[in-house]
Length: 355
Image (tube, rainbow, N blue to C red; front, side, top):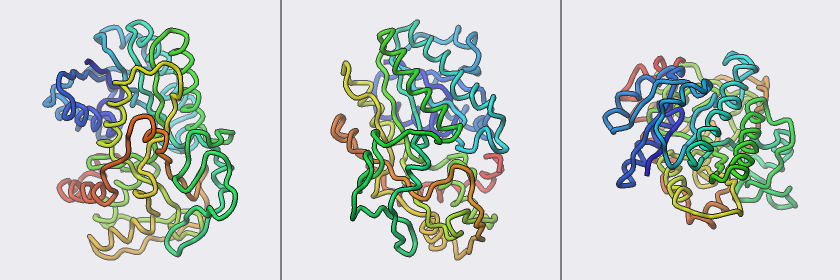
């Protein structure tokens, strides 16, 4: 089997390429990346050693697809992944639309031309911010947790947020591009007869991630804590109790491999994929973990809320477990240890990440 990975030199794309090659014989991977993200050049040499066929190109340009070989599947891992994209310092709204939505048109035309299947990596941020903010939560002293003692809205349970949860606006400009990509991909797959799987991923985390405060928060926090960089709890009373779950790309690669092996026609096509409740923690708990490893640090507090921020979101993997027998195997503790060891070996990592 031959795969094309877009955004192959990013953290997710490169980590998936490595994991998929380790876990499957007879697999060939080619990848395309514009090397725009700070640090992405670092992964090019590593991918070449793994035998990945690399093309320096931009998926926003239709002509850059002309030299790409025919493949069986495309994994679309190219995107501006920040929820603040288009409204903060990470580029304009037009750039966000071009990066995350317009580029997908070229990917879909490539899949149509070569009859290649598509695995679209979407985001947990397609879910309604107002609906997430309205979830009943309780404070356990160090983290928010879901209060399931009463009725809950559809699509959420003690297992987390599932595919049926509300996607009603507002979901952020970033989230709207990802949701539009989902609809467009599924429609094109149906119209032109190629398979499409959509995975709404939670926070992806692991060693070698280019961590910044608004993306890659686990990697950023560990690196910044180790190097005595300023750390800040933002919003929610400035106490760091907001909660996310973390998914290691090695686990995601297992799910993607199973999806690409499946010849299902019709049925469910959208899944949530994250670390789940067992691999979730608050910023305060993450800081406690770093304190135990590197020595105590007290983050400052900023009570002002950030746009689009939410207090709690954990992915419910029940559908993926039911359909593919998939559940994350890499614990959050193992992922954090890997990030910490990488941070200790690479003292300039935040600078490489553009921080």
